[in-house]
Amino acid sequence: MAQELTIVTVLYRSGEMLAETLPTWVRSADGLPVRFVFADNWPADGCEKVIAGCLEHDRYEYLPDSSNPGFAAGCNRAVASATTSHVLLLNPDVWLPVDALARIHTAIAADPGTPIAVGLAMHGGEYVGIDVNPISLFIDRSATVSRAPLGPSGGAAVFPADLFRRFEGFYEHLFAWGEDADLAFRLYASGLRTRGLDLVLPHAGGHSVEGDNKLQGFRAFLLARNRLLVASRVFTWPLLLVALPILALAHVALAARRVRQGLLRPFLRGVGRGLLEGPAARRQWQGKRFGFACLFSYLKVRRA
Image 1 (cartoon, rainbow, N blue to C red):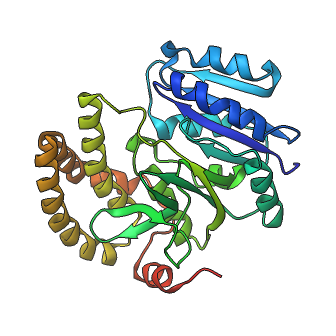
Image 2: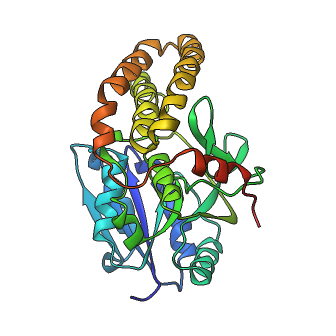
Image 3: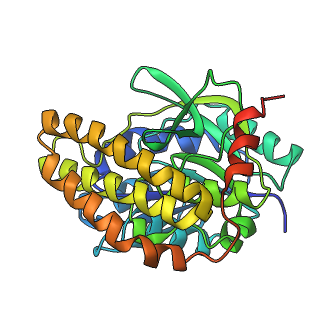
């Protein structure tokens, strides 16, 4: 299989944003072997028309699903349909500089078997991939951190397509927010490391929930639940037994923040569901798990 690239994008209430960003993707892909797959979880807002106006019909695949199965399921479905050696998971609210895809192609050619975390500039900071955090378990990794990323962020991530599929992609029950961290922990536990790419893409961040109180509550629920589910799924028992009390204390602190935001009720429901669903989530991953040895290795390794 030739080392070619498919841009995989999950859409949800993304029509206006995609109209701004997609033309920059097309310009960046000019002359390169790049295809596109769009998994549209909200087909009613005109994304299909935007895509058809920017791309030739034989260069993309459009996969609508009005049931909205979530970001994780949308990514998995889109990657399953990709026929190229590599996929670039890219959020619809990311702009591509003209040379971005050429630089990504060069990075793939230099080391085709390794996942790549592409940088994102958002909320006044620059971030590359995922980092471990004692309070929230996982966070966006600041570009200034000296150690390499734990794994790529789902907002801008390059994976060998076969590798993504071999690790069962994203855990779909998470729905959104945390599925990339779950995969990152699993990849790291299996000895697979992620490279950070010295490329930072402008990223709006949060367009799908902005201005909608109900969706903000759903996000608070998912984040609270998914932290517990990720830990339950991917940590070894010794690390999990240490992590759970720390996470419990952290959630007390996070609850105070949710009170100020008016999101305490969905947050507490998320905590309850996370505790309830943790054992089942653990049974659904039988591969290698992230333990103390992995944690110490991650914390001490610095970028080359």
